[in-house]
Amino acid sequence: MSDAKQVSPAVVRRLPRYYRFLGELLKVNVTRISSRELSEKMGLTASQIRQDLNCFGGFGQQGYGYNVEQLHDEIGKILGLDKCIDAILIGAGNLGRAIANHMSFDQRGFRLIGIFDQNPALIGDKIKGITVTSTDNIETFCKNHSPVVAVLCIPKTATKVISEKLIKSGIKGFWNFSHYDLLDNNPDIIVENVHMSDSLMTLSYKVHEFVDNNNKH
Amino acid sequence: MSDAKQVSPAVVRRLPRYYRFLGELLKVNVTRISSRELSEKMGLTASQIRQDLNCFGGFGQQGYGYNVEQLHDEIGKILGLDKCIDAILIGAGNLGRAIANHMSFDQRGFRLIGIFDQNPALIGDKIKGITVTSTDNIETFCKNHSPVVAVLCIPKTATKVISEKLIKSGIKGFWNFSHYDLLDNNPDIIVENVHMSDSLMTLSYKVHEFVDNNNKH
Image 1 (cartoon, rainbow over the protein chains, first blue to last red):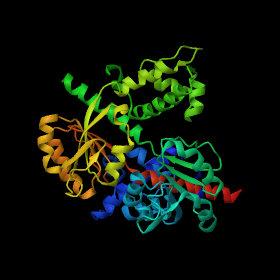
Image 2: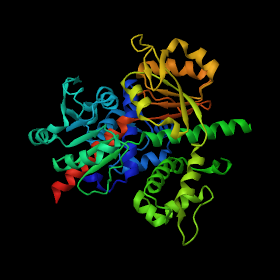
Image 3: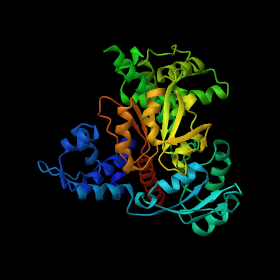
Image 4: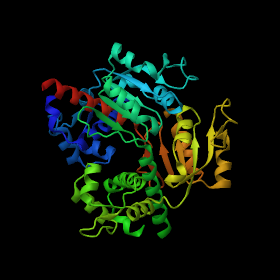
């Protein structure tokens, strides 16, 4: 990872997209792709793509394009998908269940090792083979199993208290679905907030723009 | 919206964040804020913020900062949140239920008017006061109620067929949670894909970077 230190957050954010697109190409047996073709698929310019991939030492050969499998593997390694981070899920309601069932944690560099909820009605349930445990047991669990990441699928009001408890218990990274903004300026933790409402508002903008434009023509 | 036509996708994507941050300020009775203060809260530069807001005609007064309520309202209007787009949800499994229960559609410019699933075990269930209906009834429902947007919480394999049916039935916008990439180069539709796995991979990168850096010090 030492080469990746100067990489801008914008490039980092594009890497999963590269990884995903290259994975789709592999599935349909495409072995080589030029930066121009990749750019058309991804809606970026070819020079943008060359610049992005140069940040990591570049993988292409002038005139030959990129080896899809090699590039896919390399980006996977840069993203750390060949390693394994132990994670716990807090909140076993609809959203937590959906995340646990829907996401392929193991293909994304994580292993889900515990699920916690404070609702007695949910404790004891099995989700993906993991038994839902009381949030009272979080500290003990963390002491014994040292998870590194917590996925937060809890209401906004509960997030502050739970996240402080988790940080004290050694959690370093948060995948945060609660509407509470965990500050990522805390130097002791890494936060990836998922703001689904931002995405919904962006859709609102785009739909109105689309309808307005079509009404004009 | 006519002023907003030249706005870059990157600026559009930041607008919901501005709206969210300004909303938080309003809740704690902050009435004015400088671009510098706003920049610190948002992790952007002050000049970036001035540039972004200038795209929409600018709302600040030199030396006085921004009126928080006015800016919040204006950005809400630009996003179309003062209007109402009728939406339907396809897929009433864990993810669909979580989205229906978790998201404040009405505060984001939408009204959820129908929920559909093909699983007979779910048909007839009530979610947020809406009865889950068979996907066989989608065409008739669209004819009678003219929803504009569809939220897709269905497996990847079902997405192609269902989305084609929805486009034929007059759906213009998709909020797509399925892992199937709806192409947003179709000029007849607007797509907002939600790639939760991209976010998870970004977290993997950031956690490894963080751990590597801490091990060095």
